[in-house]
Image (cartoon, rainbow over all chains, first blue to last red; front, side, top):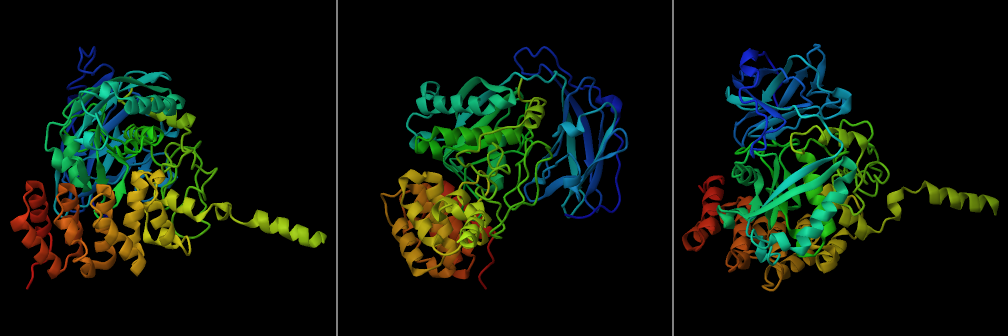
Length: 376
Length: 178
């Protein structure tokens, strides 16, 4: 990533802000409790920087700012975030010193505030300095989604499953038969158990078969296919869309269990490369509903703004004070393994590996997800 | 006597907790990332016998499809004759899980490069469309003139639009043969 040279500040009329598409009541659109704001377009300077300002709607408990699209070959993050009191809420160069995290991601950058109780949202204007590693000045469109519904310790997450030709792997796992599918229902029961400590339960579950190119997306290969698949979700409902696929492979062919946009993803925002999650059915193939449930619960945790308690290489930790940070790589192989980090976060649902006992959650993790625009 | 028993207690408690964990379990843990894949350094850092543990896991249905698949794939970090023979037998086993065959194809290309191109020919010619597609990606990753020639030949003969699209995309990202 480049370091900033100078800022191109575009003062976006905060008046325009005040709820271009503020909604209430829902009427089946899933908009109840949310306020949307079009933040307009910004163009990065030659150093890759651009400023975007936003003022959270009255009563907002969270703000999700998204900027993009800028393509899969470009990465972006926030260089700094300045809060209404002119304090530096986030600095790309020293993220571990702040109670804030921002992913570095392709195509569309989501920034969620708050991701920790140590940095609650406050009234007034925030400033995000974007940083894109594009070679040329790039114009992106930004918007904000405010959760104006109060946080609650008892909420539900509606889930919409999209099956991408997986009934060849798990018999009858398709849009027609899924409602009575024992393995999937057992999985969802376990997801509810895993989320109970977060104050969440599984709400309405709906199913459909993928209507696009099943051959291509049955195995999701690389970031572009991942993003393109998520783009096919055009719903703006407060529903977690999960694409169930046979396999996800990295650029060098390794198998991945699941991928969520973000963290965080873009709840209630359809048609973007951050509009859902993709999960493999590889555990259901083995009848292992516990692991399948942990994959789903973990990926949706990312989508709602939770980070790994400790990254595999130990380079970063989540910003939460009540989740242990692992500092033990005693064999020096560069990986903070499950056995090395026993008692130091490896038991948490947001541990980087799906170890069999990674199932606990913390009060601060609950605090974060209860402010996401997804649960209601 | 007292010194000896004290020393024994100290040695036992001074050992890292993970040293008590069997190698197979430590390997399994590295294969269990949600979004993370095992690295060569991490696996080699576990010491001797990791390649044997990987083959053991790859053959064990109780390990689960994902871990078995990543065990097969990780053998590309251990380019021994035994690993290659294991991977070749997996690629050519038409009764094996398609995911394992795909991972074996990748491991051969990642671990042996040009030398493995003949090994993965059965995957390129398989009736399994997804296996062929992964084989194309793996061969493209080799990136050599020989790999390019194989893909150009497949482009003319593969019956799947998806595979042909992957070949076309792959060729566009590979250096031209001079």
